[in-house]
Image 1 (cartoon, one colour):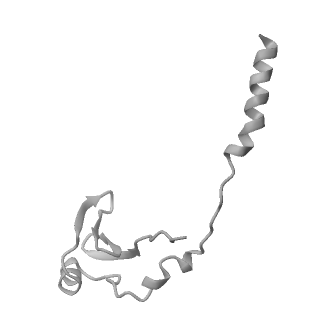
Image 2 (cartoon, helix red, strand yellow; image 1 turned 180 degrees about the vertical axis):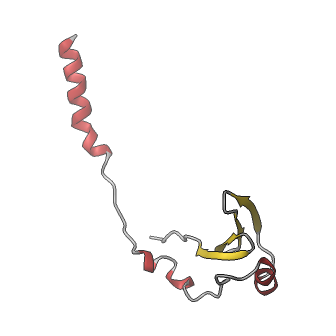
Image 3 (cartoon, rainbow, N blue to C red; image 1 turned 135 degrees about the horizontal axis):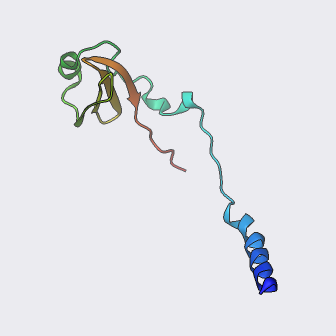
Length: 99
């Protein structure tokens, strides 16, 4: 029994390094969505009415959560986060890099 357990542990350890081989790709934050960095998008402090008048209706609206209340609107290329009734931040959506 003891030899069987040791053999099993040895077999697992022998093949485990093969299971963890993977390619790691690092992309600096400043280069993510580089083509979209110049895309015009809502700026901090805009009201929801100003955002909708200038950029149109969002694809989806996510209701406020937390304290202070944070809500978000989703557009095709970015998300707009509101704190109360003002834009807090606009975040570009991640686009996977084709290889």
